[in-house]
Length: 170
Image (tube, rainbow, N blue to C red; front, side):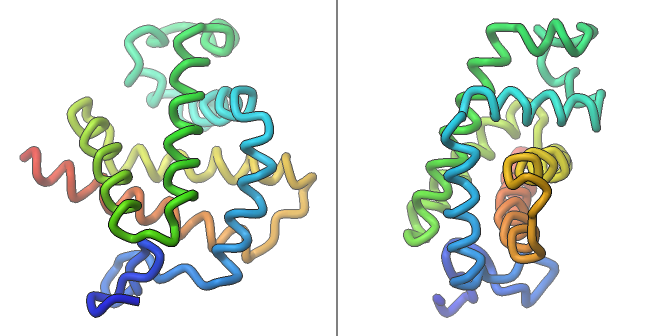
C-alpha cells in the first residue's frame, strides 16, 4: 500500500472511495475472470445485452443501436467489436492489478475516451449488475460474497476514475 492508501490500484476507503482489494479478493477476480475470458466474444456480447436489458437507455449511447430491438443489436457487428474491445480493456486492468501505475494509466485512458462521449461514473456503475449476472451464470449460481465484493471494488475504482475524468472535462 502506498502512502495515499492505494493498494493494487484500489483506494483504501478513507472517503467514499472503494477500499483496497485483499489478497483473497485478488485471487477471486483472477479465478473468476478466467471463466469469462475463456469465451470473451460471447461473454462480452452477453454483458452488453444484459446492460441494455437492465438499462435500456444505455443503448442510446451507441448511435448504431439506438432504437433497434435487442435481438438486432445482439447480431450487430459493431456490438461484437465493442464487446470484444471492452473484454480486452477489462483483461488489461486485471492483468495489472499488481502494477498500480500502469493500472491507473490504463483505467484513466479508458475513462478519458468514454468521458468524451458522455459515458462516466453512472454508466460504469450500470455495468456492475450486468457483469454480476453474467458471472453468476458462468459460476452456475455459485457466486460468493467474496466474488461480489472483489468485483464491486474493481468496478468502483473504474467508476471513480470515470468521475474524475468527467470532472476534468467540465
